[in-house]
Amino acid sequence: MKLKDLDNLVRLVHWWAARERTATILYFKKGEKYIMGTMTSIPGWYNLEGMPLFLYVETDKKPKGVFIKYKADPEEQWDYAKGTFDRTWMYIPLIELSVIPEFLKNL
View 1 (cartoon, one colour):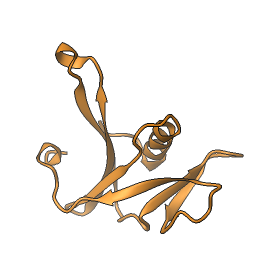
View 2 (cartoon, helix red, strand yellow):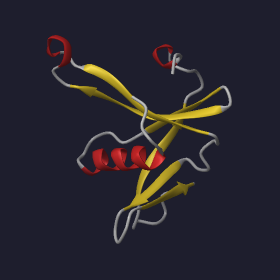
View 3 (tube, one colour):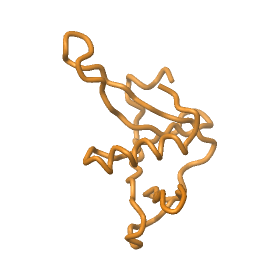
View 4 (tube, one colour):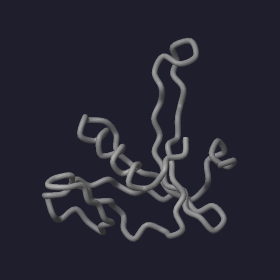
């Protein structure tokens, strides 16, 4: 499922992480674009086994760090980071894939 922009993806993954859920953004290069996204599932879909879902955005540039740092107080803001040194931020790992998974090749 394609999201509107990276702000929405970062906000979504942060929300999951704040509720003790896996919070990782995967990315890979496809043509001239970078695909950044995260995996989840819709529980109870198709005979109650669940349906996998990849939520993603397309960007023109490679991420500028290995983490995205995020905070929403006093207002929402995020940026790329190379480490997790400032504890006033929440950090989301960025994981670069070396091969595009088969199920994402048609994005």
